[in-house]
Image (cartoon, rainbow, N blue to C red; front, side, top):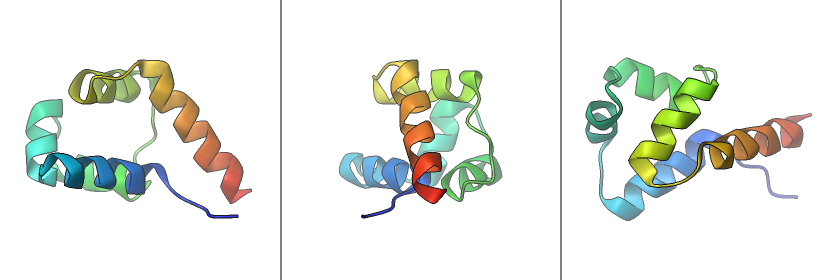
Length: 76
């Protein structure tokens, strides 16, 4: 089974949109370090972070929460 991380999915979305991590940071109102931490799995995906991602990517908050749960289940 292929394992993937939330950070990889976000990076794929950035690439598809031709956005940089710095662009995402600005859109989220986060520092570049916070975005790096998110991509590396070092920033917890809270309801607030999921909501921020949903605003930027035009998805639902629950989408990110479900995706995060699926990624964590794959690791265990």
